Amino acid sequence: MKLFSVDSPVYKFLSKFLDVVKLNFLWIIFSIPIVTVGASTVAAMSVGLKMVDDEEGYIGKTFLKAFKENWKQGTILWIITVVASYAIYLDFQLFEAVDKNPVIFLIVGMASIALAVVALIYSYPLAARYENTLVNTIQNSINISRKYFGRTLLLVIILAVEYIVFNFNKTMLFFGIILGPGFMIFTIAAFSKRIFQEIEKEPGAVINKEEKERVD
Image (cartoon, rainbow, N blue to C red; front, top):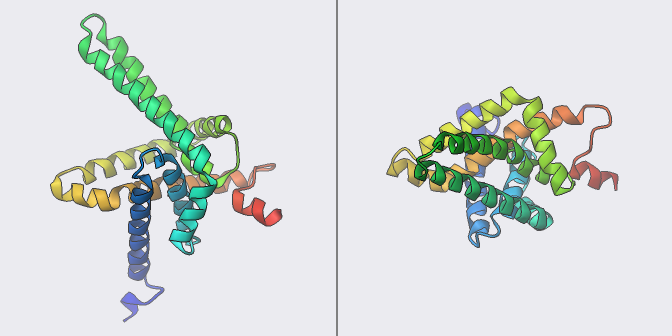
């Protein structure tokens, strides 16, 4: 039947769906030590960026290669993410506990969330695709968020919707465990890949890791 032929939309959708499930499984397994969550996320993002244009090949092999290559930067990014998240959590705890001028803590908390989002949302895919210092990676994430504000806002909204859907009830929470992180990573990768491709067309733009390997 043409409906399930290799070139049919149904086959392509199911194939991509299964790839996301595999990616989610790998991310969970390699994130179990907790300290490796950052490296696992960068590795999953590397696979996700390739999946956008069906360039991933063997997912397990691609994931392991990216995990080894991005261990250090991914780990530091994860530490920064944890520290930023905990600082925001403490700020909102103060907002609830303080009686005098609590609005200040609310404003600081909301501003901190916005800063953390723009600084980190593209940092993981940037680390997966380009060789750069950690400071430049975070700065580039901020610059991209500002330049492509509309797309970044849409990305954040979609991620929020995915999070809400996967946490809607116990049934969806089950699917959220086996699918959620993979789908959210792929969503970020899809938005990031198109933006990166536009940036790479600009004169003097930096080349990605794969192109650099071919040149070397």
